[in-house]
Image 1 (cartoon, one colour):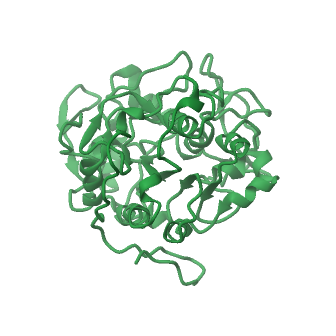
Image 2 (cartoon, helix red, strand yellow; image 1 turned 120 degrees about the vertical axis):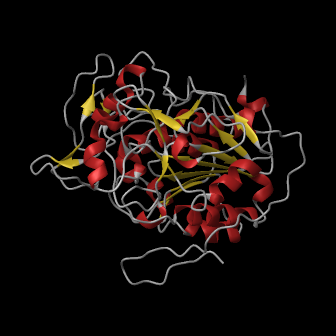
Image 3 (tube, one colour; image 1 turned 60 degrees about the vertical axis):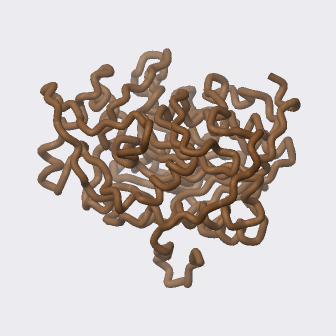
Length: 412
């Protein structure tokens, strides 16, 4: 289909990315959604999911090796193989969030669209996932043709590190040969593949990437793209993330916004000992919903990887050894989003890119990555309906954490 023949009222796309949760964990009891209340352990036994707080003081293994273990050739029964170790730290992977903690998420899901067939494109953790969210790929080109398959680490000490062209010189990432699953070289995490912003620039579409600080980081996707990091486009990388609240209030939202967590406290990341993530998401949605740009905006709220938490839906496997990963939640919020609709259409991170291509008249599959095969999320919208009036999402007040003693912006 010729993208130039498609017209919609959408002038602003906001991609809000949270951390490390599954659909079974976050979205229990959403009407019409395929959500499990039980799991299968490594012995084939059915075990109930139990309420475990977002603020539980432990994280779960969620690297590529953990993905292989948890997936277990499609049986989805490997999640508990480190359960005894996790129980000593206060819990395990067979869990769901207490309803009172995630009420804002459920309010959004039932007012707008919840997609219960959204999958992370990769079979790894945060750094590769964020690469897919801006480019539909985690190819480590031109350093190697293989895919990034790990978060960054110091090649001498093996300690975790921050990724990007600004990373310390000893920081590297693992790669995987997608054709046979064999490990590849461990390059420095500064790459040069096409990203969606290249095509937005060509169309004259503004964009911003809102992140916690400048420099390297797991969630700082554009810092790892050489032609962005060392070019004029790096001015579109903005800190702190809550700048998006002011941009919405002032009517200066760009065409495409990638919005990272305000800080670890508001990220939903396991082990952060905080249940404040929903307050951040609600703050962003409320700022946009109460702005003059609501009637021209589509907001996509997703989570970057499964975080080790159980999910019962086995992901489709493509003809490589790295795609797809586990199911992650997706909520679509817009005055044109279908009300209370559960999308059973197959989506992945490339779908977010394909939507942007569609509404901004960029040729489908321009990135020549997962945007080629992905759907464009149009099933979530009814552009023939008049724009729906926004109803404020109820949530705790958002107050970001700051380490530098500065006075943060707040959601009013």
